[in-house]
Image (cartoon, rainbow, N blue to C red; front, top):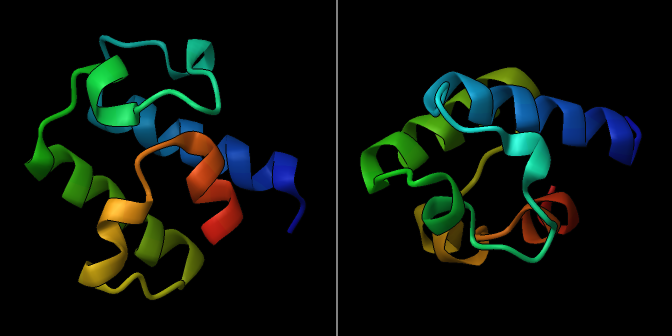
Length: 76
């Protein structure tokens, strides 16, 4: 999977949990939760959806490492 395809999946997932926000305006270094005004429950739902979509196991200990789009792309 290319980085562009992965980014499209991430942005689509963010649109689903924050339909009022426009994740395409999100810069790679911006904090996702703060910028899109997502609470911790919605962020967790987003990570679970990523697991379901990509089949990638994300341990709870790593959740804090996934605060930006750039960090998520590097992690995944």
